[in-house]
Amino acid sequence: MEKIHITVPIIVEGRYDKAKLANITDAVIIPTNGFGIFKNTEKTALIRRLGKNGIILLCDSDGAGGLIRSHLKGCLNGIKVYNIYTEQIKGKEKRKSAPSKEGFLGVEGISDSSIRELLEKLLTTHPEIGGETNEPTSPKTPITKTDLYEWKLTGFPDSTSRRNKLCAALGLPRDMTPNAMLAALNMISSRDEAEELCRSSD
Figure 1 (cartoon, helix red, strand yellow):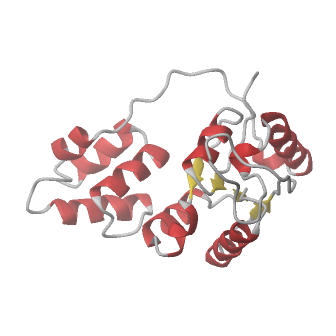
Figure 2: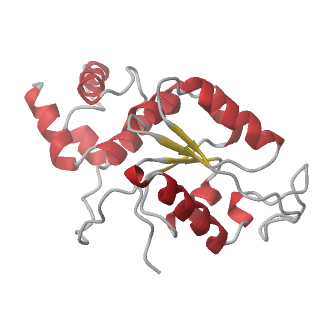
């Protein structure tokens, strides 16, 4: 079945939620790693950077999900937030030995058809986040740790300074770790663009 085209990022709680959504939509999907987002300033800044045109929040429909959703909304002042909610269904995910504290299925346990319906309803109300579906293109070349080294973003005395310059050029927070920066670059930049920015700063 064709993936739903969405132009704004979707925020979910965990990697299993991300895997679920990746089968349904071509949107950028960012997991909060549960409550880890509360102290992760790098990821919060990345979410703000990627969500400049809007963000979809799809957290679990339980107390913990509500807290994460509330925290994110507080961090996203000035950004359009599209809240969608799954139905509260009793049960547990197959991979878990016991249900969650409140006994409801998380996003990963909700059927694909239900999530697809939620996204389609959202697009009906807000067609501006659907955009135009482009013709299929070749997957972009990922940026790797080897690239970071070749661009002198790691392994050199001035690597931290170089990373900060690139972050400033791309609207990312300063002092990102190499791993965090690598993940961010692969979300917001092409390999050619990142390389050109690095070369131009030499």
